[in-house]
Every structure is written in C-alpha cells, then in structure tokens.
Image (tube, rainbow, N blue to C red; front, side, top):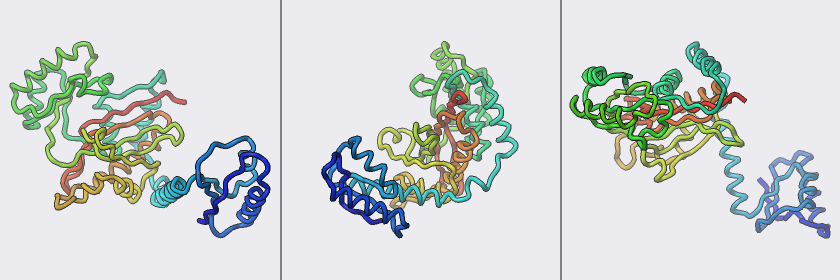
Length: 331
C-alpha cells in the first residue's frame, strides 16, 4: 500500500489539502497499481463538511493515527488470507440426507422465541456434522443409571438433562468422577431432590474423560457479521485467559488450522515444550463441521457452545463433553 499523510479538512479554507485529495482520488480511480490510503497523525471526529469531501473520494481510504492504520491494514490482510484459505469450501459439499432431515426438523419447530436445546439434542446435531461425543446413556431411573454405569465402566459423570439448564455446574446438575455404584446412587438421589423444580428429561450417564486439552468451540452471532466460528482455550480457562480467535464460515481444513494457529491453545496442540502432541486433525475436522452447520442452519441458529471440547492424544480423536445449541425465531 501507499500511505500518505493528510487529514480530511473539517471545514472550508484548506484549498491545498482538498486539491491534494482530489488529485490522489483521480489517480486511484484511473487504476493505480497499489491501494492508497491517507493517514492523519491524530484521531479526530468528522463534520458534515469532511464527510461530504470523503464521499467525493471513494477510491482511497482515510485512516487515523499510524498505529491504528497499520492494525486496520493488518486486519484486512488477515481477512483476505482467511478467505483465500477457505476458497471452494462452500461449493464442495452438500448436506447429507441425515443433516438435511435434521435441519428440516429444526425449521419446522415453532418460532416463538429463543429456544435452547438440551445437551442430548445438541450433541445429536453435532454428531451429524462429525463432532464426536463420549459413549453416553440417557436414563430415567436410578436403577437404569447404575446399569448404564456398569456397562460404561467407572468412574463416570452424571448430568441432569433439561433445556432450561444452560449452566449445569451453577445449578448443581453435574457430578464428576463417581467411582462406585454407591456414589452414583447417592448423587442420583441428591441431584433429583436439588432439581425437583426443573422439568428433567432424564439423567445422562457418561464416562469420566481424563487427560487431553480442554478447548472451546462455538458459533456466535455477531450483530454485524452474522454467525462466526470461535475456537480457543476452554474449560475454566475460557474466562480466565480469554484465548479465543474468530473467523467467518465456511471453513476449509486450511482455514480451520489457521484459526487454531492464532491461539495459544493451538501451540499446546502441537506439543508445547516437550509435551505430547494432541489430535489437532480431529479439532480441525470439528471446526470444518461447525462451519457447515452454520451455513445449513443460517438464521435459525443464535449460538452454539461446545465447552469443554477435549483434544485427546494424537490419533485418538477429540470429544464434545458438553454442548448447547440455542435456536432463534425465523426472521
């Protein structure tokens, strides 16, 4: 780029500046070999006069302060690189029959307001897009919970299933590391009493997953950009370190890998300071699946959170340990 120092005049009386801007606009409009931007030494507000002058120079950019200008240019370059990485990602696939059926069912739901799906339904949707979860069983009695735990093997996790329980840990709807049938039975009774006011669809019995790296994956609706894909450090680190990056769907594997590379979690996946390398390919595949889901659901999706999403050692995949899909009314 060519950067020129000149401020937009905020009032009449700067004939030299206006002549200079007009000359550069004519040069850019005629087909300049490089993009051109004006940069002011300081930031200041605009007036009706400066805005009118700006409208007469549509082929050049007006940026304020050198450091802000360079950050803006870097952001545009990053966006262009990301779109190049995603080239062809939107045209190389069609929804599978199972995905199309699930999207049609969601489209047929009542459009009365924002609607969270419970964990079981959220994970079922994710599985259709290649995002795996642990082997889990939904039960409706203590005896069934014990039988499921015997099949899965201790230690296990017990979670209450209800669409209204969007923050299960805060509500006391999660019990971790239950090592025996006695612990499971006691926690089943305690959780049932604790959550008696909720319309529970059942209890989820799942294996306790150990090791790996906890990530967060998600889709969030930006008021200007629409749905964006998010990835970064998850679990308790999500709010503690704020290590997340965003991009616009669709995602190719190259664009998903680039998204991870912009986070500190991405470095840990590679095996930081002698640590074991984790299954980065499985995380990349999950991000590509989220991009497909964002395109297929479109306006019906308000947000999707997968936290924690655990990356296991290389070759062993990655698992969504919790998930929350929130639907919105059709616009």
